[in-house]
Length: 445
Image (cartoon, rainbow, N blue to C red; front, side, top):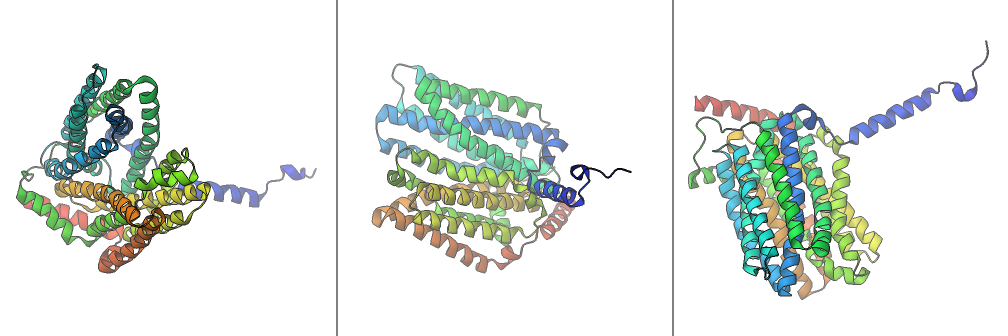
């Protein structure tokens, strides 16, 4: 018998290495199971991803048009101020409504009204002298409608998928938002500068049409029998429930702390002066790129049960990366630390969404989603203001580094104040939710 040529002889070590590499890739690969098992989730994913992409185009085009019309940075800044109050107020109202009406219908109505806003912006852009006040009205309306929509959107997901799929659903949701957050603003700026604001707004309107079609194809999501009618009492019930759950309070407060102290984006234009004017776009894109990489490699998250500890570590890593970013004197190093910061923030977000969607009873999901909207919008909005104030009083580097340090210290302090959050185990949370759902169904009977 002839001896096989050496290169044809099976190598068990090589096969083991390939299997190990394949298993490692599978362990970290994005889990798309929710898209495979639920038609309604696929439709919701398409709806939100496409709509968010278009909205991020308008997010850039609207302030760009405002500056073109007014040549005033103050007017551009006032757009953000005009958006703050509506989203805060409407998030609570939208949360109460999400527990009382068909959640799909709430999202659909909100999307339709936002499409009307896009059509208004198109018409305003086409008239000989576009009106500045129309931009303010539309910006305020978009913020309020987004606050109205988001609780119902968040509360839909646990009704479409089993609890065990929440980590994968959170990752999929994040990748749609991250891609939209990267590509949408870039294309919005190009289309607005090249073809005018009306063309960019028209693309946004088209995305709303696609989103509405996908929502129309979904099955209805009626509320449970005996659902609580929206009132101050039901809003207070949601707040009391949140306060009674240290793992929920931990997710809200740790994120607000991290974003308030460690949000440096308002300083990017000034920081770019050191690295060159062309670097400002790279600085803004780096955290989103890091978030995208973390999402694509998020398969491991479904095997982690200590969700509170994961959020705490990720928030602290965000702070450490911001500190390092503050010391960076070379562009590539600054981008590296922002990339790491964005990845840490995304990991924190994945586990926060998992805690929310796996453990909050369905009859309270909308109201708690309203609180979530307030928690993850308040931090960045106020954090950018804090960064600007500290930079004006001291220096840009002092603002960035001190913010990162306070983020880490605040995270440690909150972990000490809420030890139950640090110890939180997702398996216990699932069991408690099932018990609460059973008790609520018995009371409803």
